[in-house]
Length: 325
Length: 290
Image (cartoon, rainbow over all chains, first blue to last red; front, side, top):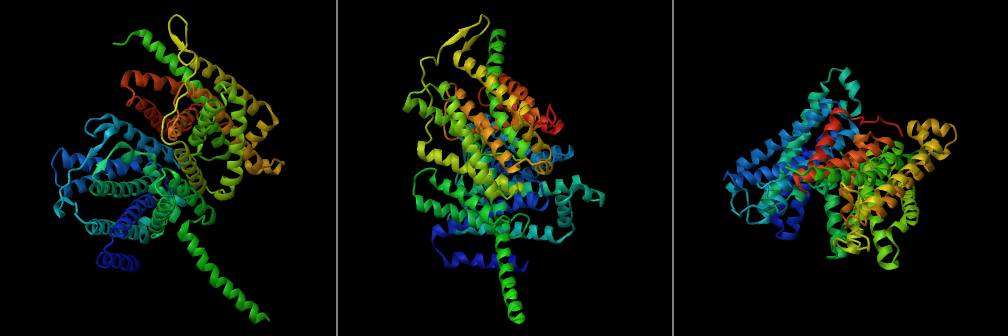
């Protein structure tokens, strides 16, 4: 908890010190990836249910927010609440359908993938979603519209969201809920034998996860003003969300954050190395992903942890040798 | 509302596509059945095969159907090497990590294609592209007839390989009980790599059969990969019979779906079936047997 407060407080000072829009923009996408990664991590990392279709929750939040704001003239704040609720409802529905029938492992992963595709196809066919061409959000700057004229404004917005999700994660991890999630992840049958209500707790996990991802969809819309079916529900969206969580070290408090930093920096670096040639930056990105998995099989956080443990052990070994001599 | 003959035509088109889809799904179901991994690079391997066939025709002037043996050999090598030097080397046998590796490999392959060949859609123009065979109640495009017939033959050959050879027996042993297979002297890692090779080889053939019918872009793999996932789940993960039956069913559903619901919404039928199968009968139609 102290760490969360310290990091958020330190980050809150950044716009005072840095005026570069480039740096702020980069920090915004990093915090945003961390936010979505944490959403995945609560379900996939803590509770062990791998989702390959987190875009479903993200995209629903995004579309619900656009439709409510543009078609029904609702305020952005209400749209934010609606996006969160929509994400949770979709999460609970997909969760109920899958978990009710005991789908596990690869089967659950494939169901989530299929749902995202169903949503993508529906979104490309309907009028209210703007079909394949997508929709725009009119610019209305101001706190009441949750749109900001400066990068700093968006930075504080995403920082607030990030702080909330970090605290939620911390709260889950330290309490009974987290312990039950862990029990389900490690051994479902054993957890059930210890009178953990497996279905109920998986639903809680996917509900929280969906709500956070729906909220992420809302932020995306306010920041980029645009949505189309591929952005909202495309497989790449789901992949990016889970990459941050798994690369960083899933199920840990700071793993997804670290994953987001590493991936976004890698993306930025490869972009600057390769210039504007399409595709080649993502080639390097893919290689980085494989390399991280190869050399840090427990995620970047686990990699650092192992490294940190190894150094003192070597020292101790050296001491022991010295004493023996 | 629809002329009956249009429906017949649509069902036949679906069956013919289905045979090719079954070939694509065979590779995926083999890899899942034996290696127990979901290979996300499957679609990108298919895409690479399609480009290979395309350039063989454009540059060397080879008819797409004549490239099949060479494409199968090349794709076999690609799959073998991918398993041996990337997936085993980097995955360390952990499911979540192997998943990431295949995702990473797909990212690399797809974007390399995007870089090299841009996002343009490419299609082969052959002298017989538009030829049809009139069978009285329907007009059959010759490319689809060849594709479905050849797909059935190759599928049968691969089925014999799995069911009737020592290699196939070793493969099935590894699928059931990797530890036991190791104990009786089967080189499990070699079988894994060979299985991946066979899976990719089926994509080599499928690519050659599909190119005269469909266009190719760097992203085309994901479309067919999703269809293949659906087929594999419908047929039962790891079941070859399931891949064949599933291929035909999905082909027909896709074809009828786009007839009744239109091109974009037509895919809904496939995915709705996908979800229904996963929820109601996750074992698929034909249990789990390689």
